Image (cartoon, rainbow, N blue to C red):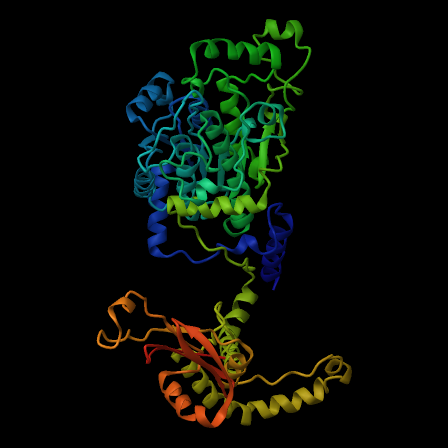
Length: 595
C-alpha cells in the first residue's frame, strides 16, 4: 500500500514539476519499443551519440560557414553541410580547423538550381542518418544578382534567384518536415532580410521594393520566360528582395498550418547587413570596397560574418528561440552619433541601439503588412507547391494523448460510423455539383448488418435502456421542442424536382439541321443560298412537326404572310407553338417551330 502511494506521488510530482508539460502531451510518445526500434536506437547511438542532427545549406562561405562552425564548437551537433561544391567545403573544413571535432561534420552535394538535386540530397540524407530525425534545418544559402540586365534560368527553367533562395528550400522543407516532427525540439529557420520587410528604411525606402502583388507570375507557372513572381519585367535586385519576402511569409504559413501538429518551431531571421559577405560578389568593385565603410561609419548597420553567424547559431541553439512564428532580429537598427568609439573599434560596437549586439540583444521584430498578408501567403504556398511538386502532410486535428480518451474513442468509432451511415441514408446529401450522393456498397452492407444486429439489441438491451432513460432522464421539455419559425418541408423526389425545374425554366432552343433541297427541285441560281437551320423548342421533335401539320386546319389561331425569297410563307400559331414554313419555288426548304 505504501509502495503504491509513493509511485502515485512521484507521478503527480512529475506532472506538476515539469515546466514544458502541456496537459497530457508529454505522454504522446509513450509506447513499448519494438525490437527493430531498439536496434535502430542502438545504431543511432553508435553513429551520432547524443548529438543533435543539424542541416545547413550554403555552409562553405559567409553566414553559413560561421554558423556551422559555431554549431560544431558546442560539441552538441552533428552538422550536415549541404553545398554545391563539395571540394570547396572540404578545403574550408581543413582551413577553419573543423578537424578538431572529428566525426561531427559531413558534407553533402546540393545544387539548388535543380529540384532533382534537392530530391537526391534528401534521399542520401535519409540513407546516411537512418532512423535518426533531423533536429535543425537552417535554410541559409542564397544568391544576389542585382546587376543582371536579364534573368538567368535554373535547370528547371525558373529564374535562378527565386529558385535558389526560395523554391528549392520550399521543396526541401516539404521533404524533411515529417521526419523532423519525430525530434524532441525541431526547428526550421529561414534567413530573411530587411530588404524584404518594407516597414524599414532598408526595405521600404530603397527602390526596388519587395512586392509580390497578386503573384500572377507564380500563378502562370513561373517558367521561362516568366522571370518575376508578380509576372512583370525582370529586375535583379527585386528578384532577391521578393525571394526574401517569400521566405519570411513561408515561415508564417508553416507556423499556422503545422506548428501544433508537428511541434516544429518555424521562424525567420534578419542577421544584419553583412556588408563584407560573398553575397555581394556579383556587385561592382567600387561597391564592394565602399559599401562596408558606409555601413560601418555612417548608418551603423554593419555586421561582420562572425557576429552574423553567431546570430543564426543562436536561433538554432538558444532555448529562448523554441518559440514558433517569430521574425528574430537583434537590437533596434542603425545608431546615431557613433563618434570616436566607432573609429576606435573599426565600426564593431556591441550593445543595444544598433546593428551590433550580443546574445541578449535578440528580440521579436515586427513584420510588414506584406509579410503578414494571409491571403497572398496562402496563394504563395499553393502556387509554390504546384511549381515545385512539393507534397505536404495533411493538417490533422490535434487529439489529446490522454489514455482514457483513446479507449473511449476506440469504442465510439464503430458506433459513430453506423449512426452516420443511417443519417446519410435518410438524406444522402449533395456533392459540389449538386448531384445526390448515393450510399456506397460498403455503406449499404454496414446498414444491413446494423439493421440485423440493431434489431436484436433494440428488443433486448435497448428496451432496458429506454426504460431506464425515461425514468432517469425524464421527458424532453416542451420549451426545447418549440420555437421553430417554420415547419420542416417535405423533400421532393428527384423526378418531381426535375419536372418542377423544367416547368420554371425557359426551354433553350436547340438547333437541328435538315438536308438542303435536291438539285432537281432547286434552280442553279438558288443553290448558292446556305441551308437555314431548323429551330425547335427543347420538347419538340421532327415527329411532333408532322403531327402539327395534320392539325393545322383544325386549330389555326393565327395566320399571316411573310415574304421569304420572294415567295409567300405562312406563319401559323398552333396550340401555343408558332410554325413558320419557308418555301422556294413551291418546295418546302425549312420549317421552324418555336414557343
